[in-house]
Image 1 (cartoon, helix red, strand yellow):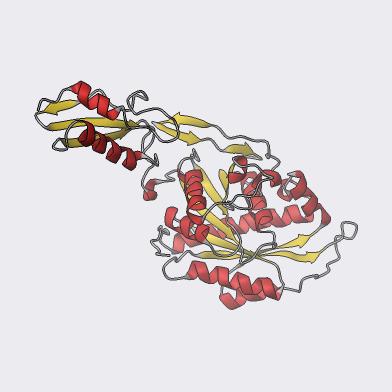
Image 2 (cartoon, rainbow, N blue to C red):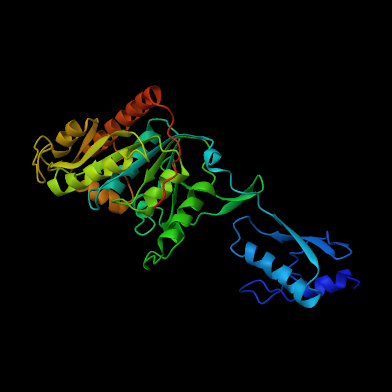
Length: 366
């Protein structure tokens, strides 16, 4: 049997790209390198990116089409190439980032995202290059906290890869799934979808050179935390809690998660949020609404530093709702507290880097 190019191309024209109604020939996915040597046929299929979800299935479909419409005796060799350069391997995913800080809490409602956003802003005000990634796929809050809810990040082709350009506000680079989904519609994704979305925000974005990359993680312990420690080498974790006993119990779990021998991420310290209430008209007064020094005592018990105590004042809630972080106003009690927190985080990060080896990504089987 004689095989000629038209036979092969006619066979490949029966292979349709899912969801488009077009075949791979008319979509110009077949490279101009078709070679026929007796019963051996070789060619290349072109895909937009290495993560194309239909890559493997289309290769199999192309081979099956040739066997069905030409001959089952044809030896088919199909190569693939992508128009977009592949994502770097995990060790080289963020080459320009010096320190990756995970801000975590054992439970929701303790102000973790408020602390993360203000820590990022305070670090930027100190002159550091800072990035903030909102890792809470199901409840993103960074867009509102930083008054960038209407932002729509775009992508640029950089060194052969289409990279998302983070939004810049208050001197920090920011990305959140909140930029890409309807804020009024719940995100109903399985764990794998959420993890893949997070990997894209990390690995397919142009973060550039950063001194501090702040990860605002979801509350509790979840697939997202596992994805983070498997994807990036976290320098250290900052645990946020209120002084309440129920919050402290969950904070202890958060500490133990990072201290797990398979994870082994250093704890930079604890932050006591809502440490006391101070009326704006009486800044010298303190009312301990949720208990006194609970996080301070936990820090002593767990032998980790207490990085700061953040008071409750009415303006901190208003600032969060208005998208103007308290750290922008160093004259306010909370602004001062966040700037002091940032300075302490810098100190503890420097100490950690002197005393310990760089954290590596981990392989944890769920």
